[in-house]
Length: 139
Image (cartoon, rainbow, N blue to C red; front, side, top):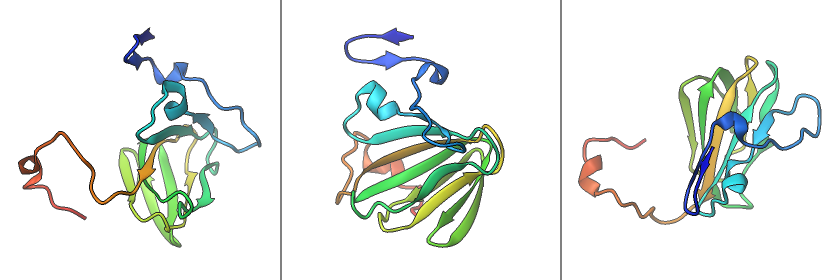
């Protein structure tokens, strides 16, 4: 691991995990908390076995957060407002509407999902110039 006053870098395997509360819970690596990030939430969930819940059924109405899920290993079955999406790595699921009810289950052991979230706003202020995105369509 490398760590300085203004940044840190380490293998994912060295990030502390949250203790499991019940059998079938995924390994939970609380990146946002561990690294002291304040602009957005980010966690990693790793399934121990096929069928394990990676994301419990929930929405973000109370928090107002947009969320993005990146499947980096294995495969998962997401349910988004009752619609099923099969996501084999590498795969991304974007949920800009906080009211969407969502959940995800691993289809194989070792399935890994990176979950990022942050409060909705009118516009994200980026250091990128708008012309960088001129040829990129929006969903």
